[in-house]
Length: 119
Image 1 (cartoon, rainbow, N blue to C red):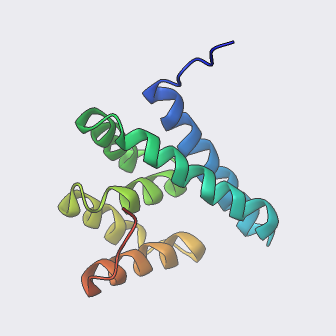
Image 2 (image 1 turned 60 degrees about the vertical axis):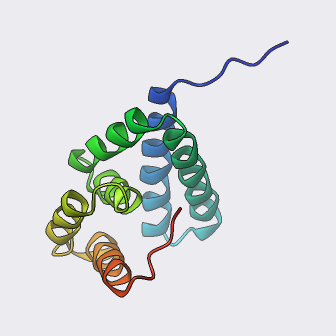
């Protein structure tokens, strides 16, 4: 039986679901659940960019997602594609308390150092 190929929207949904799940797991200190979810959203990202410009733009649109975890990770993964927009999002999120602010600060720092490598 042939497996149906996922749509771009399904990959975007996978990205969002995994990001939210990982953040919830980390807030509980549950790295055993969180770490595989990080791999899952990274894998979803790889599938999303296979759609080229359409996929990149769809991921970039998630930088305005109402869930700050999704917005942050979409910005982190889209930095190379649109640094200006993503840095603006990350700078805004860097003032958030906890993991969101810390993660945004770290992403900005790595980008500015030239050590940011997700692709």
